[in-house]
Amino acid sequence: MAKVLKINHIAIAVPEINEALVFWQDALGLKLSHTEDVPSQKSKVGFVPISDSEVELVQPTTSDSGLAKYIEKRGPGLHHICLEVDNIEEMIAQLLEKGIHMIDETPNTLEGRKMAFIHPKSTGSVLVELYQLI
Image (cartoon, rainbow, N blue to C red):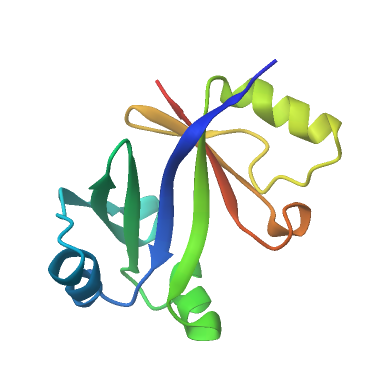
């Protein structure tokens, strides 16, 4: 049986990473470790480590991306919570068996990780990402 290991990150949708850093870096004293372009998601992500998890500042790179539309509709703010799991395929199967609606029934593989999203309709309106390091 697959299990949740920890909160890997909390993603914050922002119009501009550098503007968001005024709070996260300048006010709180946290440090941006690096940024990463994610062309498949039409976004750029700024990683702000906190202990053994992170805050990810997620900026759309195009005006037609899902994230840009999200910010336009809801404004900047909490986008999703990411739960690190020990076996993502097994976790997806367990959730589907319990009637949980997945956005991704097959995990997406990026360098060093697999990820899949659970639909907010099944989580009390919170977008939840499952994440497995590989």
